[in-house]
Image 1: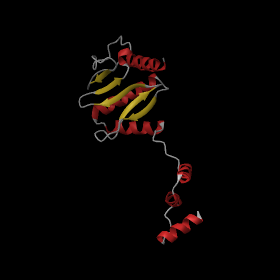
Image 2 (image 1 turned 90 degrees about the vertical axis):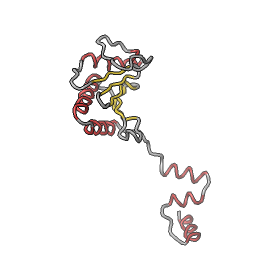
Image 3 (image 1 turned 135 degrees about the vertical axis):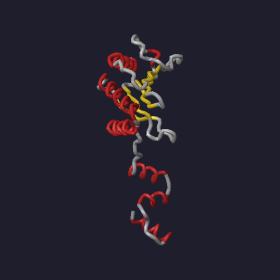
Image 4 (image 1 turned 180 degrees about the vertical axis):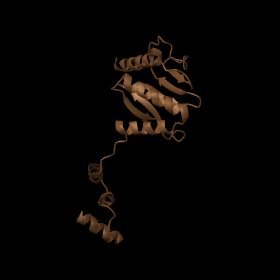
Length: 173
């Protein structure tokens, strides 16, 4: 590094800000390899704890009965399948907080607070048995099914838990 530092001082008459800058100045494949070794790329995936904390924030920021309902549904999902993984996906300018997602070998369901409802969307819902008729929206889709919960609606916890477990089972098959 002394040689590189001396070269930088001669060419710019100043000290380099960081050794990596001087490695870049020298150029070549060896410098790129060395930089990759010194500064490995950071993973952009979230840890479970981080995703859970983000969902906590989403629930907290969702006002009124919709926040309470999203919290109730989250508890039911986690209670139905203790191996479910919480994730936050699809962050974009119109929804910077992202969308809560529960996965077990693939997405089981997605939770969203809409203007007049809280929706649980099951990406493979058309393949799930729904003997209690919980699915009430997206019924014309060949793959997706969803449940809209409106203010005051009762939650059939045992039927919802059965859908969660069947969604996880379907992902494993």
